[in-house]
Length: 198
Image (cartoon, one colour):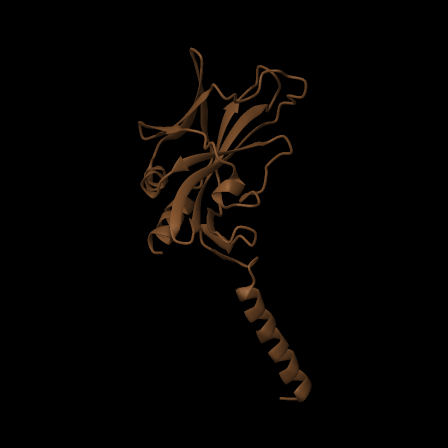
């Protein structure tokens, strides 16, 4: 092996070790991604795939839909671990200038998993207060509204094993149903396995 090749190999090894120790580095395996938040020093575990629920709005336009997406997140701050659903609410309908938001603060969201109602109650604290400096999942649209709901591993496990899933938006007397549009139950099960082994 020539000196040039040895030196190149050493540079690659050092670079790999530096990346592994870097506060911005992340580990992605199966259905989870784990990283250290360099601003808050919290260890974040987030699902790699997202459950997406959709409601058809063909009365407004062809292929028009409202969406709600859910992905599990665990925040570990010096051993204090907390589990949440990170959500985006968005639509293919242009709501600019519309005083009626897709989800208002008075609306109730209920995740139905094999007949079990799971109330999604908004977390009052900000992501930064909880230990996340940046959004843990990429926004699906510029107008998407990010929300956070407290959860626990048992609930994520139940949802990951459920056969029938939907989200109900309860608004006054009405109940609007969002049907499962993109499945991520296998990723939920991998998330549960990962956080349960730590």
